[in-house]
Length: 269
Image 1 (cartoon, rainbow, N blue to C red):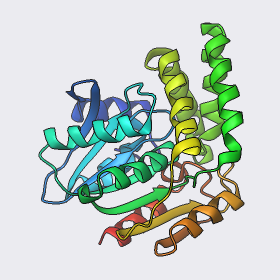
Image 2 (cartoon, rainbow, N blue to C red):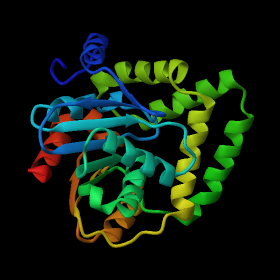
Image 3 (tube, one colour):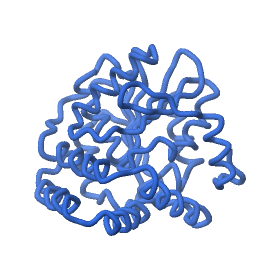
């Protein structure tokens, strides 16, 4: 899959050939591996499954791995319930759930709405609800409605590239991937849905105690999740195991894949 842990366009072509997307209703997703245990990986704001390729290839040898592309649904409750229906279609009743960034917000909603479906919860580079952020996300959502399409694609490409923090040798690959995704796979409806999902989380999500096994994985230099926000998430789930990586940025499984996957494997056993 990779050479020296560095992806390439040839690797991506091979990955796509060996991991075709499946469809269930409005959802498309990647499904790999076999076995009694399953790991569900919930993507971040890009809404796409393919950036989880390193996780898929690391775990598909001994368990099932499911990674959805999000349909442009406006609420996290709708996404959580759609995900539950997707798991039903795959015959999965109880799974380990990992969510990164936006996916971590969805994971927190999913475990509240479907606690019996979750064996353990892993939150990566994500947030606790922050009511002060609501006004900002409302403004951003309004702007997306107004910006012309060609300019919106340029802006969103830069946004995704700035949030993505791969190792220096991988940056050109992932910058090109983000540009291609914005150009050919994502629409204004997707950008609006991401803003609506984040707004929904900060405005409406009410945390509740979680008795499941939990891991919080973050980085000491995340440019998106500030230290105070990291501390708020840890305080929200005091029973969770916490692992902080050094220099992993916001997209930990791109920038430090070996260390991040090792931490995940240790937790999952």
